[in-house]
Amino acid sequence: MASGKEQEQQGFKQAKCVKVHGPIIVGAGPSGLAAAACLSQQGVPSLILEKSDCIASLWQQRTYDRLKLHLPKQFCELPLLGFPANFPKYPTKSQFISYMESYASHFNIHPKFNQAVRKAEYDRVKGIWRVQTEHLEYHSRWLIAATGENAEPLIPQIVGYGKFKGTILHTSEYNSGSKFKNQRVLVIGCGNSGMEVSLDLCRHNAIPHMVVRNTVHVLPREMFGMSTFGVAMALLKWLPLRLVDKLLLLVANLTLGNTDQLGLKRPKTGPIELKNVTGKTPVLDIGALSQIKSGKIKLMLLGFQVMEGVKEITKNGSVKFVDGQEREFESIILATGYKSNVPTWLEGCDFFTKDGMPKTPFPQGWKGENGLYTVGFTRRGLLGTASDAVKIAHDIAGEREAAKESIRSCNSHVIIHLDHDGAK
Image (cartoon, rainbow, N blue to C red):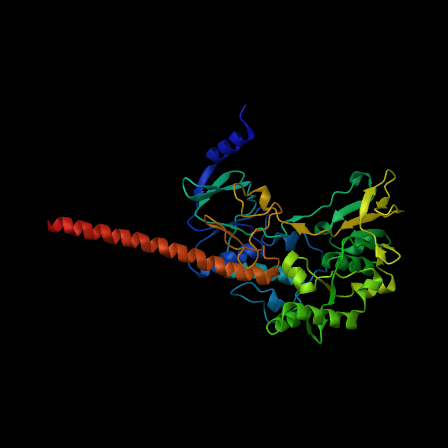
């Protein structure tokens, strides 16, 4: 019987091979579309492989109905084509999807859908990337990982998970609070998703109880009539990062109050510095904090110490916390974020960490070895995506032009050599 490795090699040999003259892009989300558009502008063809049946599948299939962009639209534009002028400052979910579809149409981008990449590996003998889907194997000089840092839901391991009698779902499956009316709902996580889901539950007359597992920065979405993010970006052009963080926190405390007193303890590191170092995004408040203050969103508190998290689901289906308390809930929503899926399909490459993030930090993490590139892994949202897409396109276009020049030079030498032979 063949070993697992031998079976994989046989799969590569048996799959029908397709030669791709430009880069293979894995993922048709904003990152993949941005890379394809920038390549197209440079005259470089590309092929996008997408495991789902649509572009921007995270937005279309795994986001809640009331979602809007957390940042103003000018900070969320992809390269070469901005949002329509009539879109609001913070576009809705449907408007962002419309923008993505228009973007793909404008640049004539046609991904191959339902093409889940099972394995991608660099062939050092042939100098190509071999990318295998269920039925085909694609070959290219270049591979662009564009699945991003939010490819798969991050599901925590909770003891007794199967014992819970009610509904347990991740925010990727949550659409609206209308299904949870009058229910006691445990929301695990207090990032932007946890806060917004809790707020949505309130508006549908559910009773959300939010577990805060870590320290968190909560900032107002706007300061002085301008977006907090825009203010921060403007200040960073003139002031040191840590001073900007201090100013943001000063304004946040003046406008929102001391969140520590609510049980939402702030990290010691400032919000922008923390985002740059760890990727942890500050919460931009759009109304959840007032609901916490009023008691409509309940924090799982012990005095003013927030419970660390859920320990297990007990035999009778109630939730037991790490401090020993037990509570009963009718539903649990996991607002625990997402993770990269690169380790599940990219093999023989040490460019990524075990968590599927580039080992080289921003701004140099977009390029690996042997024609490997990454887009959507900067921890800096769509601004980082746009920056990397432009760099990748320029780099690949430069390589292609250098290769063409080398061929022209070789052909020129052959012609000259033949002319000399003819002269003899």
